[in-house]
Length: 205
Image (cartoon, rainbow, N blue to C red; front, side, top):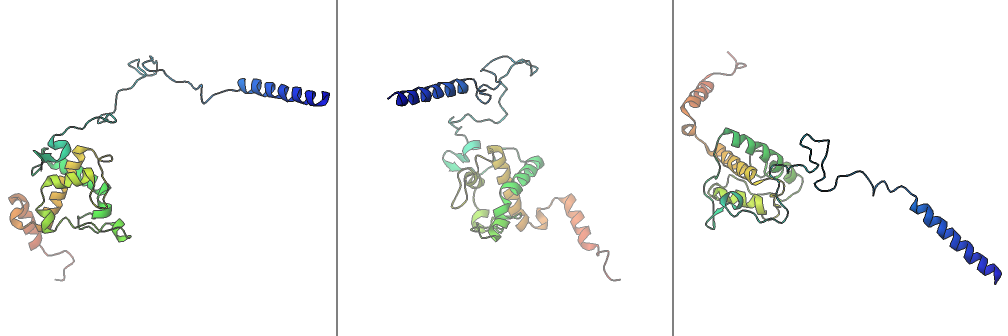
């Protein structure tokens, strides 16, 4: 009986020692240096620890605007016109974003034979079919926004402005495959005609 009580006392003492040891441990991960909300800071020039939001930040759960710029639709119908100013800068941006996010499946020329397709992914339709050449530009924006078939939505990765830039570039790709000399500006047409008339440098005399 005495031996059993002594064992219990020994176990209790060991537990007390263990708890005391744990209480004295450093909780560096829990007690790490940090700023409380709205606490001032000497690190930043404006004295604030809370930093301004990055441009383009969308509040989680916020309702999106229902205008054509964000939905691709006007009065419930797919947009037929680009809601942004079309210029060279927009097309360059669209080309850049297209090559990053779209060309892996759709191919650099939009023929639907990108590298992922060549490795077994389901082939998307070519942009140069009569159906897609006749589709309103809002169609491409909507597909990028919501996804279609095996294509996932890209609204998280690509903001609305860039989706319109990609849609504009898709139109440029479509035009490039069916353009005629009459579609070329007069100043550029002269250069093309001159180039066509000039024999290659390595041509035999």
